[in-house]
Image 1: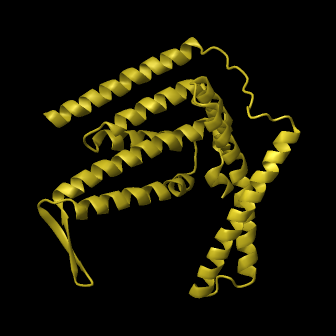
Image 2 (image 1 turned 90 degrees about the vertical axis):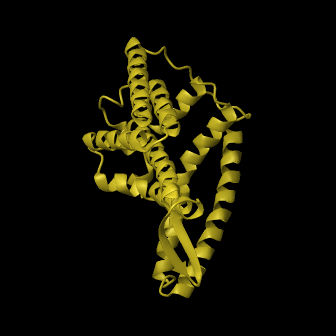
Image 3 (image 1 turned 60 degrees about the horizontal axis):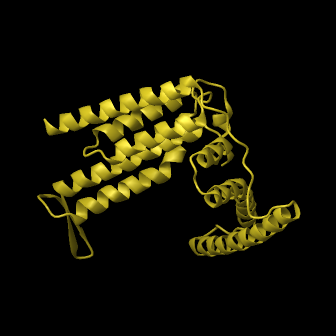
Length: 259
């Protein structure tokens, strides 16, 4: 659980971790824009493949990458299935459930594949960014981009205390298992509902304790951020090279689609 949600791999020393986080955020933003504006799955899938290959080359465990992709891939699957069965067009396959007939169309499958590839490509970019940039550097860079302080402070607190809640949740699950809380379907449902209620209650208590502790330490509604140094020339060159490469790839993909 710790490896899945932490940025432990972002603290290694490699070529990408040494790049300024502001440059990495700009490149990630450009990639996501190109992925979202794509009309076919070619560019988003290509971006996803490049991001995955980069993470593997940085010696990030493939199993960990797969675990982090489980939830996004579930969203991709839902998008493809929903679009396939809710868009009118040439019938591709039919499915009968409880007397109801659902027909998937080829047009819906194409639309769903485009949406799914966009999600897959954008998530891959974010996974790579989080694998080469520690969270505190990303938050600091966001302030440099004039993101509202309140948003950044909330993100900082969420990131800080989500691990505390994960630890508490893990302890509760272990305690429930020791007491045979998951020995049957009925008891499992009861245990999950009790777990959810307890975690919500503890999160509220933690929020109050955190606010009181911050107030005692002089917090007055504004979290101080130290100024960032000037970006190096190499970082600007990296941004320019990435912009050129992304623009070229996008234009070529669009040209290939048009032809």
